[in-house]
Length: 423
Ligand code: RNT
Ligand code: ZN
Image (tube, rainbow, N blue to C red; front, top):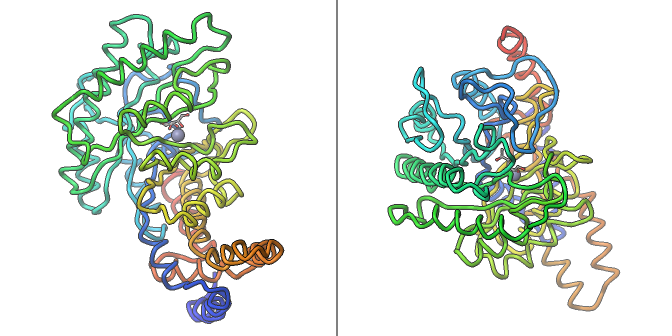
C-alpha cells in the first residue's frame, strides 16, 4: 500500500498531466466523492431474504451460485458486514433494501401486509450512520410467484396480492424518505415471463399495465419522496423466451407515467451498449436509475469490475453532464467469494468509473471533432487511456480516509478470520 507521502507526490504529477489536457482533477475528485452509490443489501446473504420458511423457493430467474463460507444469516450479521464495507469505501453511499429483508420476529407477516415497523432495525441503523435508504418490492421467492407470474398473472387474486405488496412497499419507501430526510428510490422488478414460446404475448403485458397503474394510483404517496423506477430485462432463468416487462415495455410505461427507467448493465443482448442508450433514452426520460452489474454468458449479475461497459456508461453520463439525472445503484451477487470483497470490488469499480468519466478531456475532444480533426480526436482519446488516473484515485481514497490501492484487503482478511470463519 502506498504511503501518504507517495500518494501526494504521485497525485501532484498526475494533476499536472491532466491540467495539460484541460482537466481539473480537484473538481473531478470532489464531484466523484459526492455522487451517492446505493449498496444493495442482497450481496450479503446471496439474495435469500430474512423470511421464514424460505428454503426451496424459486427466486424468479435470478440465482446466486457458490458456497463460500461466512454468508450473513440474519439482519444483525448483514448490518455488521455492511458496516465494514461502508468503512472501506470512499465517497457517499446509500443502502438499498429489498422487502424480504423485513424483520418480523416470531410473527409471520406476508408481503401484502408489510409496514414500516418491520424495518425498524434497518431504519435505526441507517439513521445512526446518516445514510439514505432505497427500497425494492420483492416480487419473487414466494409461493405466489411460483408459477413465474406475479403482477401479470392471469389470476386476479394473485395480481391483487402483488399489487397490495407494491402499494405497501411504496408506503414504506415514503416512510424511509421522511425519517431519513432523503428521497427513497424504489425499484420495481418482476420476474414474469415464459420459458418457451407463449401463445399470447399480449394479455400479460396488458395486465401488467393495469397492475402497475393500480399500484401507482395511490394518492397518499408523494412522488418527490418515493421515487419509483421500473426495470426491464431481456431474459431470466426460466423466462428465456418471453419477459413481460421487457425494455420496450418499461421504456414506454415509465415515460407515459412519469416514472424513472432503470437500466441494468446485465439485461441486454451482449452486443448492445447501455452507454449508447443513455443519450437516446434521456432525450425523453428525465431521469434513469443505473444498476451496475456484469453479464457473463447466461448470468447477468457477476461482481462489477472496471470493464468497458461500466467505464463507457459513466463516460457518457460525464460527457452529457447528466449526473443530476441519474441514480447509481449496484446489483450483483456472488456466493463463491468473500462477500465483503465482492461489495468492495464492485463498489470501488463503480466509483472509479465515475471518476474516470469526470477525468475525460471532453472539451478537447469536442474541439478536435468540431474542427474536423478526426485523427486528433482519436489520438486524444487514446492518450486519455494512459493518463495516470490511478494516482488521482489514490488521492480520492486518501481524502476520504479509506485505504488506497488494495489496502482494504488486510481489513477484509482480518474480518474473515475473526468473524466470517466462525459463522
Ligand atoms: C433482476 C434485477 C433486479 C434484481 C434485484 C434483486 O434481474 O436485476 O434488480 O437483481 O431486485
Ligand atoms: Zn437490476
